[in-house]
Image (tube, rainbow, N blue to C red; front, side, top):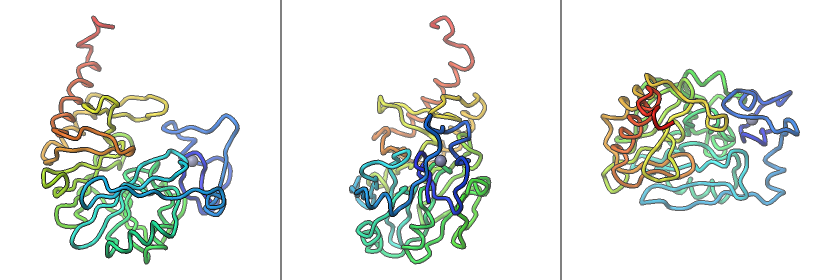
Length: 268
Ligand SMILES: [Zn+2]
């Protein structure tokens, strides 16, 4: 079963989904709704796959389920990695990913992106589900494939998870050095979230309920990605600066901090 609002699978659904009851999500006015993969299949949902750039597939569910995230599959010579997990699964998508070679890991940036990670793992030969240690308490469907990690974790040469925190303790990003033709890609989910202007990003504790982070935390997040080379960023809706993204992150963090510090109060 999965929560219809966040799209996260639950072994024993009861009461209200803990992820949605948290201040970083929301419960519908009509109350908690549970659904199942079978019900979604019967309603005609399917996984759409687009190639965003060489060795990078973008997965979405159509019609959207839950939050409607865009997930990614990065291919490397040693295997592929699923980054953020769709809240639905179907055979054509599994076959497409199988064809890329071994699945090195299935990993969500934070609990809102867990999707149906166990279902994907089971369909892909018990592929390891990596969960950053502080996020383990949010796992609602325990699975033998779940493997905790912390800090910095190299999945393949040049493909490295970084625990940043911020949005959640344990929120992470995936740095792919070979992306963007070798200029580097940061798969940032909403640990670092793209703004609609395509030039800047933001950082929040809660996106739907608009709760900010402190200046110290934003400075820490920006400092954590400063050493990483990347020209392009994709958030969990497939958006982000497509050039000079590293500079855009630093510039956006400085702007955010200056507003928090009151530097622009005369404009308010
Ligand atoms: Zn939920």
